[in-house]
Image 1 (tube, helix red, strand yellow):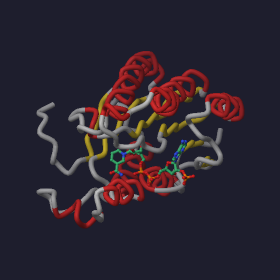
Image 2 (cartoon, protein in one colour):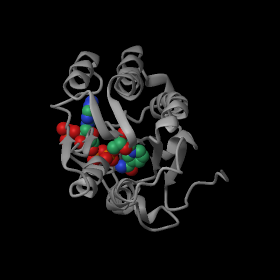
Image 3 (cartoon, helix red, strand yellow):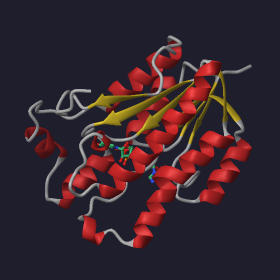
Image 4 (tube, protein in one colour):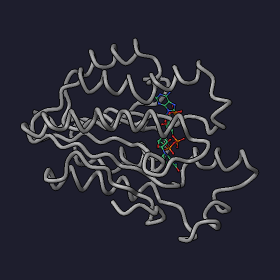
Length: 220
Ligand SMILES: NC(=O)c1ccc[n+]([C@@H]2O[C@H](COP(=O)([O-])OP(=O)(O)OC[C@H]3O[C@@H](n4cnc5c(N)ncnc54)[C@H](OP(=O)(O)O)[C@@H]3O)[C@@H](O)[C@H]2O)c1
């Protein structure tokens, strides 16, 4: 059977770097952008799963939520991002069968370990999904399917440029404010995912891997 990978939100940024990394490792590569599959639209998610009932590699990625002070997050935003960051991914895990020996990769955020003051939507909903992800990994491991959650720090993408622009900054300004004086190159994440798939790495599962260049203060 042809080896297949599905990369959601693979048209730009981190998802695109992962799709580029996997391009010559699998025989069939399905890459979606928002117009192909908006993960806040649960009916679209169900249709997508019906079209793609099986894969070897499933990359769960989507656009990030806005950065807002807690008091400004409306009920409508909570509902929308509950669908986009949580329920759609739960439905995909339940409906898209990842074949024995496969990989499920989640793109979350370093904010799940160190909540940002304006990132309540991201911190909370992603963390809830990571708990589901861990639970699902416990049965998937019996079939040698590994689950890896990648938690990126500031990464050179359109999203970082947009978030920086909200406070009149550029990506270079963000980098200057970091001890590393650089941000993460999305190609590093793409190369890591490629490595997991190409080298059949399965001993690593149910874990969160920070891609933050070491700027986080957590020990574990
Ligand atoms: N960049 C960072 O510094 C950073 C740090 C931590 C976490 N993250 C998280 O990593 C994920 C990817 O971010 P990125 O920086 O790679 O973003 P990006 O460069 O802005 O790319 C966003 C991708 O998500 C897709 N997308 C947007 N809204 C979507 C929706 N409702 N449903 C499905 N797909 C959607 C876009 O598709 P179109 O091309 O069709 O618009 C595009 O492929 C996000 O969840 C983000 O919050 C990023």
